[in-house]
Amino acid sequence: MKQSFILLFFILLNSFLFAQDSPDADYIRANYDKQEYKIPMRDGIKLHTVVYSPKDKSKKYPILMQRTCYGAKPYGEEYKTRIGPSTHLMRDGYIFVYQDVRGRWMSEGTFDNMRPHIAGNKPKNKQDIDESSDTYDTVDWLIKKLKGHNGKVGQWGISYPGFYTAAAIPEAHPALVASSPQAPISDFFFDDFHHMGAYLQSYTMTFPVFGVQKDKPTGESWYADKWKGFEARKGSSDAYEYYLGMGPLHNITKEFYPDNFFWKELIEHPNYDEVWQSKNILPHLKGVNHAVMTVGGWFDAEDLYGPLNIYKNLEKNNPSMQNTIVMGPWSHGDWAREKGVQAVNHIYFGDSISTFYQKEIEMPFFNYHLKGEKQPTLPEAFMFDTGIKEWKKFDQWPPENTKNYSLSLGEGETLNINKRTNPYASFSYVSDPNKPVPYTSEIEATRFTPRPFMTDDQRHASRRTDVLTFETAPLGNDLTLMGEIMVNLIASISTTDADFVVKLIDVYPPDAEPNKITPAHVSMGNYQQLVRSEVFRGRFRKSFVHPEPFVPNEKTEVDFPLQDILHTFKKGHKVMIQIHSTWFPYIDRNPQTYVPNIYKAKSTDFVKSTITIHGGSTITIGKAGSLMDKFEAMKKP
Image (tube, rainbow, N blue to C red):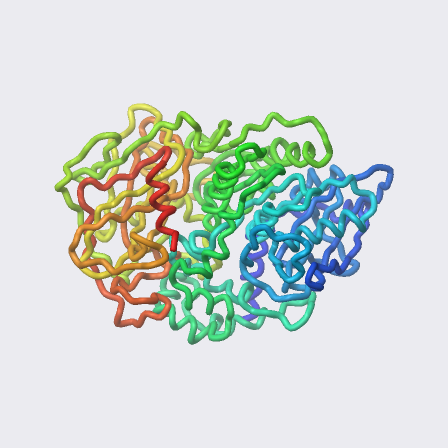
């Protein structure tokens, strides 16, 4: 069972990480030569680098590079089955470079999850190393040592490789002229393993991948035997029961990860302290003078915060640079492969959307900046409207003329748009961490980070007594909500801590027809499609650095953003808001008793809490402005 469990995990992980097709490898062998190098960094550490260069030596080619913690495999004589960001670029002629980052696979050194950036770092600083300096030294070596290149370098990557791409943007080598961070992690306390400081329990099985150092360069996995304990647990076909039976997070430390360095980092730093602050790449995206195209998916369960905030920080700090963002109807990395039909869970978005992106957006971007081909007529923001299922073009994101909408909670479970409601109204529910709200409508097996739930039907939640549900009347006209989302709750709780989950939902009309991918057991009539959602750990309502307990039954403001949106609610549909306090097992459970460190909470700390949301609470959609400034201030020491 252990081997099958790990094999299944790796299949899911590879699908998530690389999201690539596998065209005939014979083309690569026939058209590319492969070389492997040990490239020295400024501190003497050597990074293993694999280079695929065109056999046709009659012209010069640009270099397109990816740095990865997942292995520049295969090593030796075996070739990859696809190289480059897409089949189209692979066949267009580039020198493709893959590199194992410091401390991973065939490279020397020590691995660090999101190594802190050193601002102003220069090549003369021999011992000051970060991902930018390693990229700088690699580009410098490639430009000086490789033959047949045209002197221009680009880079791309998805997920962790997306972070390495983003981390190389500041203090970049002069030859680096185009970067495309895709689904990039940007700030670990708000991205990937955390959401607004809450731990994503769905990531629990991944820690052997990221938290085990190797002894020496190797082409074989050194962490495959570190899943001890998972395979012995019963009930893994039901993730909800599996994690509920696991109990508090301290049991994970005891049973699974007593020596995992990354897990230790999480449990010893439950707040946004200097460890997480130092790993945040966003403050360093300054002085950028080359082109950047950031890519993300509106339904990326792992990294939606990263693309949006990397684009916005580049825009704010570098007004004269070419800064582009692309957001499509994808899950994590789906734009890098073409499945024909683009769907997320039960929702169909169209055909060949990834091919359109690869041929009409990504390829022209790299070909213009690296090959000098005709400048593409790309907008700054190429954004997909997930309601009417069409691409939209904007001069910036959010657009300058974005209209603000305010959703307010009304009596009788009504949701009002741009209308004041009774400020003395109140809405209560009892949150029980021992009977948490499921994050998905269907029972599913224990798995690495779930994806389908990002458009899942929310009827299972709206029928629970521990979920507040508010909805509009059927819309008389189409309603397009775009831009930033800021939640402003006025809350009181009977205990000293709680989480707040807020969801924005598109409710279909009763006569909604099934689409081409609707399963037989799913009715689209009255379907409650999740459009955007987020969790917020209430202890951080004033500061992510210095958390505070609630005063029982005292009103307090709980303000936090959901990630951006571009969604048209069609005529006849309804807009719905749900609010609750558990979201399991996607997010770990808040014990609802304030403890200094939830990772170390005991079973006796988990208690019921009566949560009350008061009139005057709103959800604002458009341009957050000063409300977003308030959120950013909560991150400061």
